[in-house]
Length: 141
Length: 141
Image (cartoon, rainbow over all chains, first blue to last red; front, top):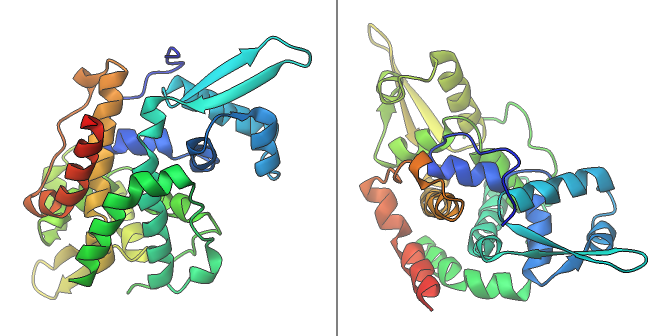
């Protein structure tokens, strides 16, 4: 696992999780890597509005926090693949529930027209299924 | 529901959720309000290191985002109670899973000595139970 560039400050555990997950393009990167490894060029194509500098910076932070692994293939031109660690993959149900809740929040504040559908990948949907069913069960009560 | 002081920018739904939940003292306030309404003075006693200014600012933001309701009792000295809305209470399983994941993250990065136990309230534990059981079931596989 990559050595931490900067240790996380002492924080309560939920705030620690938020510090690791929150950040421009981080949930986006997670969504796309839940499906499998991606090259930097693929991630850039999926997020044309992200600058390469910002995207690489977020990926480095995710690597330092143990979510992402980078593999460099020594070829011409050099190829860099990013994939999720087990720790990164374990965020799938949390990201899915954040997405569901974000849409619920937008609905209650009459702003649903301003948020997209949840971009779900097959694995994220599969991993989140027990939680989402449980949450729906509670909502129906 | 309080009128939004400032509309949330157009964000993907998971990032919207993170924008609403992340913020110094917000998960702390949620934890304590899951148990029932609290006066500002009680919240201040529970968080002696928080300045009143910052705590009130976070509570106002949570009110503007539809998570918290404020009730003012016209008495001397005036009393202000804060409680969670239905939307705020619906965050209980998410906060519980963020807390569990934060501890898992600290464990994997050999920093468990730097994070506290999850502060669970009876209602938060109850609401999160189906999700936590499902997550544990998956981890054992």
